[in-house]
Length: 609
Image 1: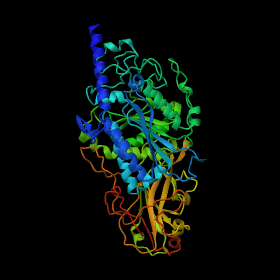
Image 2: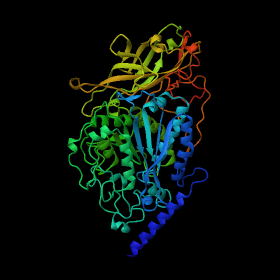
Image 3: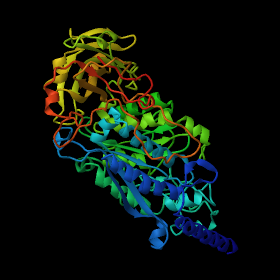
């Protein structure tokens, strides 16, 4: 009895800390006391509302910050506890934008969740920093970001477990679970940071298995008393159902409503690789690994090859290990987020564990930012067709030849395209990708019906010169007529995509890879040449680093030329000042640059001809 009274007193103290944190909403942004590189709970939410949303609107992005549910404590007392909030951001797509051939559909979601486990400090800060970086890239007209924001919408729930997070930042640094002390009478016997429900064992798919979760109140893996019993998970599930296409949900497994898990996972459908859209990532710390379905059992999911390929491409970017079904299976997890999102929503899903501790040291966090940004960029870029695009070749760079920098105005130009060194894409085969076709479109990514075709060539034809399998480069001659086709002077974006072959000769498959975006400016005057290349989803970004969280407003560098800025209403480059510009004799085609040397990625200073 004395122990129970002590635990009740501890729980009341926890509630007072929640109330205190709720009232701390004025003044400058503050950090977690023990880690000054991470915004604390209140500062992160205020940064989103006060800094990010206004800046995104100023850049003509479409952005919302919405309340989608309540924390457990708020369901007990509406004056206390916290809202579950989600931030969405995307660009303005063309009116006739399509995804997978369907007109007027919602954009492909990249759905990110953080702070499912309260004590894992780094994940919310990583996504916050990436979104700050996104604003900077859009401000500087980065073609990769402008491209994927046309077809992908980013959804971020910064704090799935806000009650637990506030305590983890203050008095209970090792708290993992939410603060539900009612679900099990034995909760009163737990230590002050051990009661509650593990939200990553409460999702309503294969919930309730003893291998991978626990019915014990004090276990780190407490699953709750029913599937999706926790209001935090109800909010996440309901939101997921609102952003992933209904046809995928109808094709997927039913959401579990009874304590008995379904046993027909072996009959789960394989999602169509060409029509299924969306990516889900649950970010955690620590481990430096990617976990993908199935997690509740050591068996392959129906889309195993695509899941394996995508996660191994992330492994190539970050060096974090991909661990899925097989000898490297991470261990059973029943009722986990990634299994749920894949099985019921069709999303390409993973749990991303990064860092080496729950409270990652600041220097280690800062050192890993660049590669983690690149991984997020890659996922945003493949979201429209994740199961297909991940299996195609990745364009690493596109360069104009030195000879063409000084070419006469009426000459054609040559592009040298380098393909990223491929990963072993099929687990049972050592076969690597060979490029078999290349295609390019102007002004819009290929998911748009109004993207204008420039060319589509088989790599083995005479149009392609000097295919070099050793350094994976080849050259393509591009006619100025191909570039212009009545678009005329002004700023343009060239979107290039490569198709590769995978598998053995007897079971060879062909896939288009992610789009690389190349900025081009067609001018009426000769302009001095500079150095150069294009950006792709695997480029290495340059970012400023500091042990303090960055909240500085986004400012544009002084520009010598602006990159393509398409008006979605009239489909014309905004930089073309008059119709007379289109009638000029075209003297120069140039990939434009700014005076800020850091805005482009290393090795991608722009070129002109």
